[in-house]
Length: 121
Image (cartoon, rainbow, N blue to C red; front, side):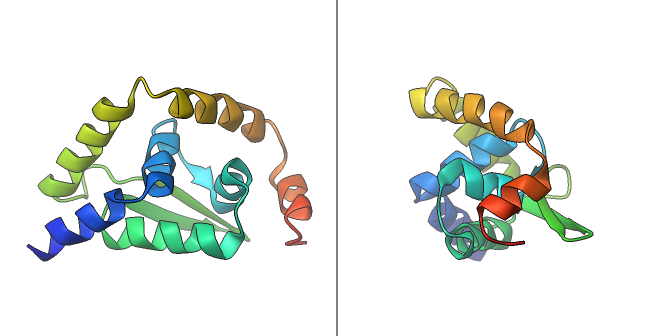
C-alpha cells in the first residue's frame, strides 16, 4: 500500500506528470528540466525527489551534472504500470506537445550555458 500511495502522491501534481512525459524522450539533466519549466532549481529538485521516492525515475551523477530518466525494468510492477498509464493518458495533451518542442530546443544548448542562465556558474 505504501508504494501505491507514494505513486499516487507523485502523480497528483501537473508539473510532476509533465516531467515524466518529458523524460519519455530520454534522460535529461536537472538544469534542462529547470529550463523547461522556468522554476527555481530547488522546486524542480523537490519534484524530482518525489518522483524518485515513488520509484518512477532514476538518477545518475556525471561530473557536476545530475541526470534523470524514467525507471525501467528496475521499477516494481505498480510503478511500471503507472508510467504506462501516464504516457497513454497524456499522449495527446497540447501542453505535452509544447513541452516536447521546447525540450528539443533546450537539448541543442550546451549545459554550461543553461547553468549560466540559471545562475549556477
